[in-house]
Amino acid sequence: MKKVMIITCTCILLGIFILIMNSGGLLKQSFMDGDDVETLLQNLNEDIVEGDWKKGQEDIEKLKDAWDMVSKRVQFSVERNNLMGIKLSIARLKGSIRGKNKEQCLIGYEELISYWNNLEK
Image (cartoon, rainbow, N blue to C red; front, side, top):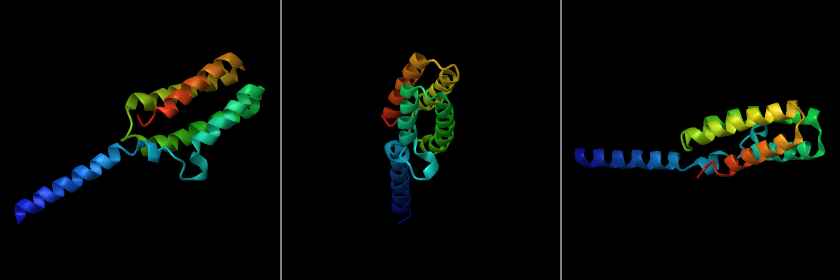
């Protein structure tokens, strides 16, 4: 009986760990108002294309705060390189917006989108 309990507990724990490791796609979705990264990315793209730098600075700050919330949820189910890549892309994009450089903003935006879309892979 004791051996069966040990095997059962081990299997349950392994199942839980596998679920956590494969839940990146689900956990990156928005659960609250302040963590909707996809909507903020779309707003930021519109700001860049229109050249609305003041609104772009506000949106990049909101995006940074939203990413801080999401990164805590997905940190165990995605690769650390992807987490750091998104963080660095946000910082690079923030600098490009402050410099009002549309070309660099578009490059940074596409890099950020690439990281975001490949987050759970």
